[in-house]
Amino acid sequence: MTEAEVCATDDSLSRALAGESAAFTALVRKHQRLVYSLALRMLSDRHKAEDLAQDVFLQMHRSLASIESDAHLSFWLRKVTINRAIDRLRREPRYEAVALEESLIPVSDACDDDPLLQRRLRELVGRLPPAPRAVILLRYQEDLDPTEIARTLSMSINTVKSHLKRSLAILREQVGDTAAMGPDGTPSKLDHSSTKHGPVT
Amino acid sequence: MSNNLDDQLRGALRSVDPGEEFEQRVISRIANDSPRSRRSVPAGFRWLSAALVASVVLGVLITHDWQVRREQQGLEARKQLIEACG
Image (cartoon, rainbow over all chains, first blue to last red; front, side, top):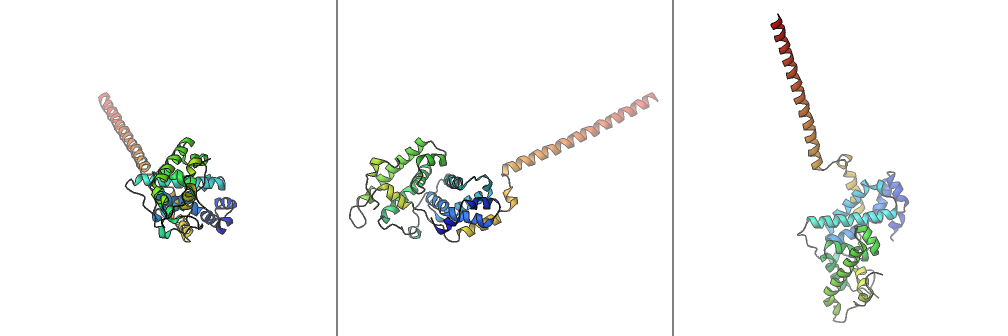
């Protein structure tokens, strides 16, 4: 959690509701990573993601009275962001997700991650159909369990599990070439053992 | 060390910061979002409202016209009756 996020406490919501603009700004600061990242991974375009994220916060400003708590706000933001992104992808059927400008993506904090493999994974996730893509993002970006994902996307848990299983199988299959051999010709770090345990417990 | 697909996905899909100016851009958009535009209704509803108002106005005009004609006919009949009796 960043310093800005720490500053934005639950109390920001009630103060924002009372009309305090600084409190609303704190809420935006606290949740901007969540909203922008979901939008970016759904749309695979920085400008469209920023536009969508702004729309979501505008809607949040108008709907503040219906938000009950900070947890409810996070749930609401995820739901609205994903729904808006899916709507946008449906309105632009010819729009094909393309690889993000990788140079603009912050360098990973962890040293033991395989950047080439992660880049390939981002590309492949961006090519999944919107609904499975949303499920994968909520699972691996937001770390939600299938029940929470089902609630966020208004899907049954079985549908969520089915999307997860199928999407992971596709990713595993398509990433195979990348995984089999690392960039330096050595075997990659990708271990297929996760198949045995499945993506969810 | 990350050594499975789950971990690699978590690493690949790590959250991204939108940039320092983002919150300012959001606040600017909210400031430009006037109460008038907030109350705006979809175009379909605007057309429906306009059609309803036009129907009511037309109905009032037709009723008024019909009442005026009826009064004139009554007056005419009264005049003819008076003339016939006289």
